[in-house]
Structure formats: structure tokens, C-alpha cells
Image (cartoon, rainbow, N blue to C red):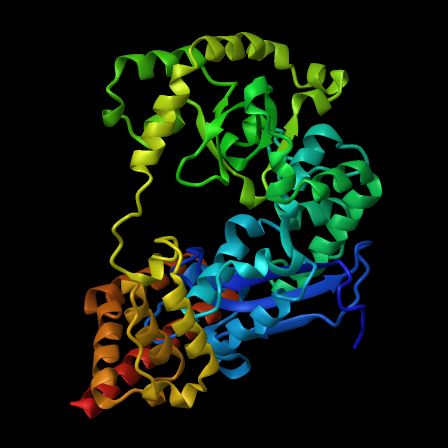
Length: 481
């Protein structure tokens, strides 16, 4: 075991493998993390552990083929989501930790939030409390390719566009990456890729590390000066090098972490004309997005770079003059009324979706102080004693969330009536028609990969698991009745 000073700044590189790609509905299979110092030297033993799925869940068949982790393996080697979540929480919450992954902002961090939400741990504080922060190496690779590509080999697809898949980048740069889509292997590969950027382009690495937190990013945005900013996002696509120059327009009234901006590579005249002619109550957020309006979340580590910090050579190389950015900015200045219209539309349309499944409701608002006290009580209660506590939640989500929390992790503490309710809930997931569709999906994959013994064995194991689970639920239902 390695040791480091208690409040030393550290990076925590981490990764999940999951039973599917939906960050709210799919379940984790594996977690891995490695802690390094500021110079990316490993200072702590790697952590790696597994989680088995709950009884009200179908693993996504294709995910098993990618990760090669079966539910049976996690049942033997893993733990329930309650223990899994608490282990992860204790790793992430260490003070002065910068939590890093590869595409973690869009995927792994969302998995973390949802695991904590389902298990009555704070979904957010791990990423900001006690000087903690987060960062994502994927967008660092994108900006590095765009502005400082030297010293790194960049894989391309068959039409010459860059590929940013971790496995392709490691292969092209001769970085050992034995088992892509194995969490611990992916973490080691991410650290080595970070070292490569830090070694080859240290100024770029340090600049974007400095400007990863929202408080630092606010300093780069000067709405009143009408200064364009380079913005990196996958929404622009590889054909545009995942980048655009955007003009900061105003802040979202619902959320001061959200910057409303305009894509200066789009036709600004069309946007202004559309907003002049239409009643704003008939305009959807999708309409705005199609016309070049962007929402940039400063608490999601966006890559932003003001134009005045970009060299003349880079501006010429990026052919910015071809997009008439200055003319478009002047047009927006002359028609600044659009800022109020756009802000109003986003304010009015930015309502929570009416989703009935509590597992999808993490973003339906923060829990109030009263409910947070009850959540604290749940955390302080031993699982065996959860059946004895009575909780009168004010937030409508929490009653169902608490029931699912007990049923998924501690089925044995439920009384017979609660067990009936839970088994009925499971059979709403495992309906005959859902099961038939699931089996058809697996059979199609068996046919597609009939030549691949490893894949067919994995799919057969998944079928065995699902049939056994269905049988167990069926017998449980008979016994309860």
C-alpha cells in the first residue's frame, strides 16, 4: 500500500463497465480507479470491484459482448449496488481530488450520480466538496488535435477524419492497452495518454487543467465585450473537428451554470429572421438548436478558449475568415433583442419531463433540507433495521426510491406484502412480451456471431441467467401467494 499526505492534490482516474449505455436505467458491472499525484505518478494501489444487477433489470445483450462480463460472474465476484455505491463514494470523496476519465463527463460521471441517487448518497458533492473537481481527457484530446497536434499520432477513419476512441489512440501511440473495455485496463491506458499529452504539450495540458472549474471558466466569458470563444463539443461532429467559434449571448435564468451562446459557423441571418417572424411561444428549444443556439454548461468542464488567446497562425490554419465571424457578431449586436427572446423561450420550456419512473427523476430538483435529514437517517441506519424506521418524505420521489432501495439490496427485510409489491414490479419488467423480444434479440446476435465461440458462449450464459431469474421470480410469487 502506498501513502500520500492527507490534503495533497491528486488525480483519480476511473472507469465503469456497465450492462448497457443508458446512464439512468442501465446498471454498473465493474468499477476501477487509480490515484496519481499531480505529475501522474501512481501513489495508491488500484481499486477494482464488481456489482451484480438487481432483480428488476435485463442486461443489454450487446454490452456483454463488449465487456465480456456476465451477470453470473458479478454474482460470484461482486456485491449489491448499496455496497458498490458506498465503496465508490468513499474513494471519490477524498479531499483535493480531481476525478478524471475518458468521456466521463457524459457517461461515467452520470453513472456515478445515478448510482448515488438510487442509494441515498449525495449525487453531486463528490465532484465539488472539499476542493474536489472533475476533468475529462476526451475533450483534451480533441483540442490537442486541433491546436497542438505535434508529438502525438492521430488515428484517422477511411475518409481522413480523426478518431478519438481510447483503444485507437493507445494503439496508434504504442501504449499498452491489453483489454479494451475492461475498466482497470482502460484506467491505466487513460493515465498513459494523459502522460503523453503532459509530456508533448505541457502548456496546453496545464492551461485546460487550470480552466476546468466553473469559477475559472466564468473569467473567460465576457458577454458585454462580444468576444467569440472557441468551443469544443461532439455536437459539431468530426467533419467540423468537434469545434466552433461561438458568441456568448446571455446566461440562462433557470441555471447560472448555463451559458447561452450562438454558433458563429451557422447562418445568423436565418436565426434573426426566424425569431422576428415567429411568436416565441410557438418556438421550441429544438428549433433554437437547429438554428445555432447552444447551451454550454460551465459545471461540465467545457473546453473554452477566447479568440484573443489563439495565435494568428492557428486562426489562419483554421480558416476562420471563411466564416465571416466579425460580420455575424456585428449583426447580432444590431439585433440584440434576440437575446431576450431566446432567454424567455429557454426559461419557459425548461421544465422537467413528466417521467413516471423514479429512476429517471434524478434531475427533477434538489431534495430540501427536511428530506436531506431523512436521507441522513437512512445512511446512519443498519440495513437490517431499515424495516423499523418510518419516514414521512416531502418529495414524492423518495417514497418509491426508498422502497426500491430496500427491495433491490435487502429483499430479506421486506414484509410479505412488500415482497408481493416488489415481485409484481419485477413482473412488469419481465412481461411475457418483453421476455420474448429479449430472447429474439439474443437469438439474432447468436446468429450474427455464430462463427465466434466466445461470443456465443457469452450470449448463452446470458440466456441461462435470464431464464433462471424468471424462474426464481415465478417461484417466489407462488410462495408468497
